[in-house]
Length: 105
Image (cartoon, rainbow, N blue to C red):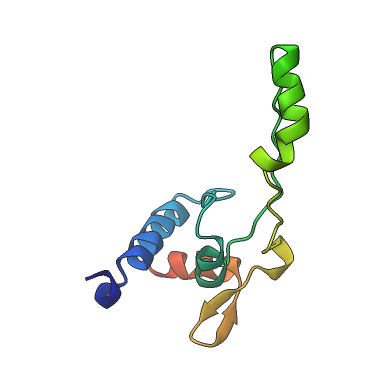
């Protein structure tokens, strides 16, 4: 059923449409399906950071030794400069998507 109706994309487009109608300064699209959100919606990634501190010396030692294994680095694959929409071969920016939502009203 999903392969026939593209359910994920249609739900994603509807949620973005609802959000754009509220005229937000930014939309946080979440941390999964980065490639899909980048190519279909023009989303981009921002670097994120994490602070973890062990309460006892033993936990601090474990975190110091195993931090990169527990929390592997995740490079930014789609920085803001590359944010473009794939709309039938044409390139449209995220701002164009907001303009299209305004035109639908």
